[in-house]
Structure formats: structure tokens, C-alpha cells
Length: 372
Image 1 (cartoon, rainbow, N blue to C red):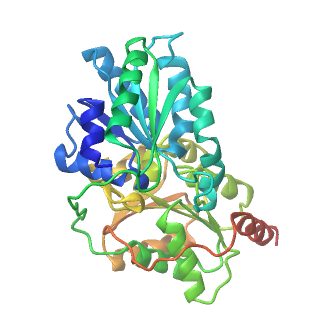
Image 2: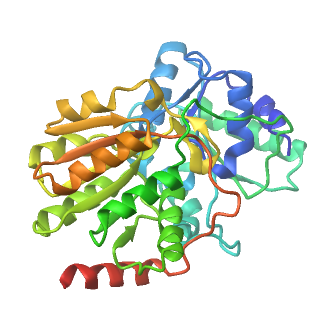
Image 3: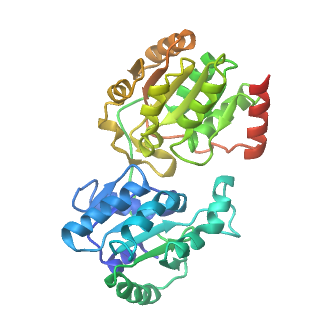
């Protein structure tokens, strides 16, 4: 189905969301049509933020907004849906567009399997009526579903379109890029060279895939690394938990700008605890690059200033390998909590692989290594 037809049939004037590769056609259409326009399209930090933002739009205009997300974001919307939107509370109508990763019977990565199994159930539990869009869904079928949905929306209910893999198409090509030259994979290679046998907690997406492949290329084991393949935004909190309970070890966290934004409340908690053995590295390319390259607000954000305000004793930003190597070497011997923001280009190798070990295997060898 052409994404233009989906947008036409829904008939909404405001979209907000967190990008998803399953919804790349929609994301590219919105970026091509509106860019980031506060009146029509905003990419927010997490799906709960999107839902609250969309609620504010409805309160101000009386119109029905659209929130788009990967199904992993359902967990982030449960609270605002149940305690804000629900017809027993404020009865705020909203259309959700949900990318169905891990759909039963469709091969996907381990972090998506259970989420895929419960995607429709969670919507049902939240009293959100759903309609599944497949490659063969016709325009007439979608229009009929929207007629039914409009009746529910008029009563203050919420509805969802669940998008199967490959269901939406968009012909125009969108290229996302910035002015930085360091690639994320090479940045991680430099981190690995300095961290040595120190444990690393890496964020979800291509960063963890690149870390895995670097270990393979170096003929190293994978016991040093906890690859946070799901749970976007939580790798820094995982690293904090490890650092506080392994005080004799230097712990490194490889984070991304989109992930750091998603649950930024972790920063003041880390800063308040001040583990002197934690190095928090935020690779900032200003993009949700793993799911297509759509922008985050991090390009214009003073991450160093935020980290210092949150209690990080040391926080620096680098945009060259010379500066990166110097800061990594200083962090290696430092006895203080450190934040290093690294400005990165957008992009990854086309032939980037995926971890060949299961998530449970990764956990077990990492835990065994920490016990030594």
C-alpha cells in the first residue's frame, strides 16, 4: 500500500512518533512532506512523550492526532494510555500506527520475538481497537476500517493500525547525513583498543552489532561485552548497575544519542551515584540511524552541559580521533565518572552482520567473566 493513501484515509494533520524501520515509508514521507514542523510533525524522545504531546495537541485543537512507533514502544505508552487517554479518565482520541516487529511466523531478531507475540494482546488490554495492514490490504478495506474507527474516536476511544513487514511503500528517496567524518564502527574500534579487557555495555542497534564484529575481527572473545539488543535507552542504567557492584573494574558504556534521549532521566541518577569506575560514551550522530536515519534533537543539544548539570564530574565532547584517543586514555586511568560525547557521521556498512550468539549465551558468558 502506498503510504500516501494511508495518510489520506486517516486524514490527520499532526503526527508525532519515534522512528521504526518497519515504518520507514511513513517516516520518509513525513520528513519529505513536513520535515520537523511543530504544527505537523515532531519526532519525540520516547513513545510516552509522543502520546502526551499528541494529547496536548488534541486539547488545544480538538483534532485527532497520530502517534507512530515500533511495537517495542507499546510499553512506553501504557501509562499515558491507561491514565490519561482512557475513556474513564479524559477520553482523548488518538490514532496509533504500530510497526509489527517479531510478528509470529516472520523471522526477526530475539529482542522482537516476545514483543511480537503480545503486540495485539497489549492493544486489546489497553482497549485500543486495531486493524492489521498487510501488503495485500486494499484501499477500500482500509477506508472501511477508518469509518469504523471514526465512530470510536468520536467517543473518545483510541485506535491502532498495525503494520506488517513490507506493507507500506514510498517511492521518494530520502538521504540523511551530517557534517561529521568519524564512523561509529571506527569509534567503537578505538574504544575497544583502549578498554582492553574491561567490561563494556553497549546500546541497542548497530552499535552492538559493530562491537560484536570488531571482537570477531580481533579474534577476541565476547565475554567482555553485554550487548543490549533490546530495551532502547536503558544501557546506561544497566552499566550503572554493573559499575556499582563491580567497583574494582572499569566499566564502559557505549550509548547513542537517540537512546540517551529516550530515557534521559538515567543521567541524573548516574550523576548522583557518581561511580568512579564508569565511562559513559555517547556516540552522537543526531539520528535514529539504526532504523533509517531520521533525526533526533541531539544535533543541537549541549550533551556535555546536561551531563555536568546532572552531576558528572568530567564531561567532554570530541569530533576527531586524536581528541577521542586522548580522552579515552584519560578516562582509562581516571578515578572519576566520565562522559565522552563523540560526534559521528551517519551510516554503517551494508554488509554489517548480527551477533551469532544468542542473548542468553551473551548474558551467561558476560556474567561468568564478571565473577572471575
